Length: 379
Image 1 (cartoon, rainbow, N blue to C red):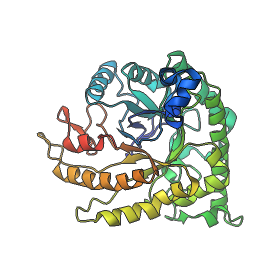
Image 2 (spheres, one colour):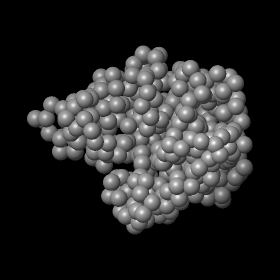
Image 3 (cartoon, rainbow, N blue to C red):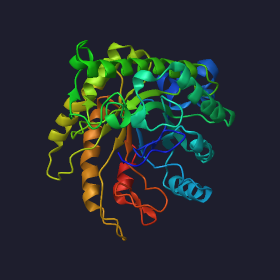
Image 4 (spheres, rainbow, N blue to C red):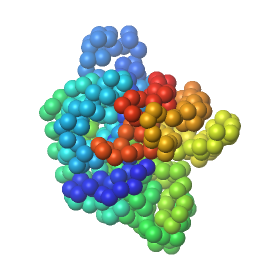
């Protein structure tokens, strides 16, 4: 969601690269208690199964962990606040400078949904053309980081490969500034459309990297069953940047074999802040614009970003409007959860980086706001 300068050596931009979620056991949720006892007892099933999504909805919150703000004191202070407020899973960029943070979090009973970078080297997201990435390059970047976490005994909550790759900010195959064009499935399939073909080539390369991620996951020691999620895709942004329609991007992935590789599709939802907007209208908009893709493929939508901003950062906190908006959207999301279409609901965001204000943050004035408490309430 945020825009800021990219971080050298790890290719991280200021977009939301850290999130939180509550976790459920993956394997035991898919087998009955009786079946688990037949294999090695229900308790044994709980002890060996990875931390992952199952029947419930992962509910959590984004955090910002950019390089330069992760002093040991800041990490310890942040960890204390997170633990005190019952956060059980962090979603954070899997980059070298976050390894210690992920390990510390796990030691505090906080697991991690990690955003996995599909590229390596000193790059910004917008400089990277997915059409030029390779499985070898990805493996060289990803495997050493995963090995360090597994050596430390860390079980992850989920892998999410990339972020908003249907926008020019996170996909160099899309021009920025451009014409403001929104590419549809027909454009990606059109051999006479050079721009559509470049994006399609990049998406096919992305699917191949996803297959590599799955293979590395399957052969890991501790995370063989950790869910894999496709990159959270953005709603239509408009403006001068080119982008790919969210539903059509997911359909293109599915046509190229993605269903066999992922456990869910990532989407980002930033709803209208109109207090008068009816719940039925919100449901219809979300159903038509995003969740339809999850219904088609039988894979749940993982909402890895959603939320409302509050520009009034004064203390004591004034967050009543956002509380009402969160109440409205929680009812909407509950509708999709009841249909089995929602895998995760991760709020944007916890707080800004050390010493910086953040109008999206729900941890303010030294405490979690009422709007934040509602956003983090289990569903």
